[in-house]
Amino acid sequence: MVSDWAAKRKVNEFVDLLAVTPVKQFYPTSVPKYSENLTLESAFEQLIELCKTGEIHLLWEVKCPGESDFCIRTLDKVSDYQSIIDHNYRCDVCGKETCVTNDDVFPLFEIDEGYRHFMREEFKKKTNQTSRVRLKIKSRV
Image (cartoon, rainbow, N blue to C red; front, side, top):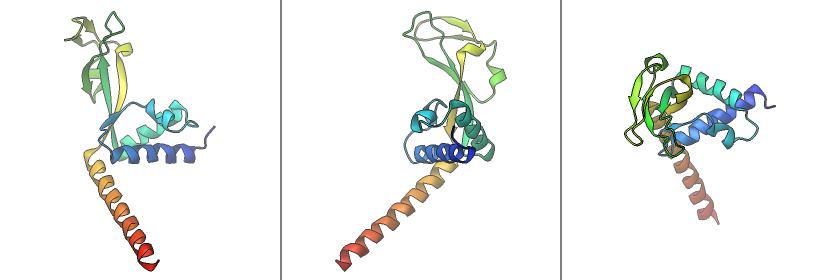
């Protein structure tokens, strides 16, 4: 079991790394894959904390419950969970019409654009500082 501090640090590190990439959204199941010692529960708890402080936003994704396994089309993404429960959707891929239940909804986290911009600027600063250090070392040799 990973301590709360270690879990918090690993989740924060994961979000910070994604913020400087083109990835805008991710599923909570991707965090334990990043750090094998994390459980999904501890990762999800920390992700919710990051939602409270604004680094990320919790969205709810509705997926097509198509009769065959081939259709996993995203039908909708919303921030208000209650607005999609019992709502009817028709899939434009398989044609199935469905009334959304809890089984059709998945949590999805989106990185805040302001936070993304901030982290990219921090990354640039860090990269520039590292480049200057390398130049100084090379000039002394």
